[in-house]
Length: 190
Image 1 (cartoon, rainbow, N blue to C red):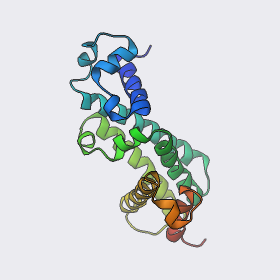
Image 2 (spheres, one colour; image 1 turned 135 degrees about the horizontal axis):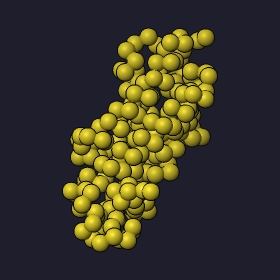
Image 3 (cartoon, one colour; image 1 turned 180 degrees about the vertical axis):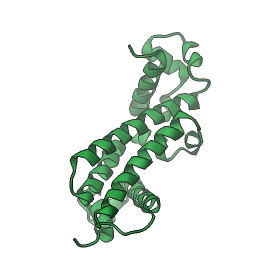
């Protein structure tokens, strides 16, 4: 059986998807799952705590997707592109939640489960980058540095694409073209 806290997190994620961050209040989330307006406060001291719960759940989901990609794609460059596609699809399917994960400093500063979940996702991504390095397909530089650089660049491309500024300037058919260009610049000939 799902706990009330878990149900609140799911309801908050749905409100984020449908109305953005402004739609998420503890009262609205309580109403969405049919509990009193005070019930959410038994699980989350404030709205930011609830939003951190949503972000932690999403980071865990992304980490699991990275693990699945890593276990299913034998070619290191294709594995890295598939992992980046996970993030792109999440940003397109859940733009408000993506912004919560990567553009909200107040939520990012939350310690505890959110920090652990974010670190888990980053570690899984770094493992994919490390696999590419071990196969000789990516530059031999500190893995965490390269992983952060790739991820931050991908985030910049995602953000530019979401704002509508990317494609008219580049002529790329989609964001994947930009990510393939990025990884192509890094990839070593085999």
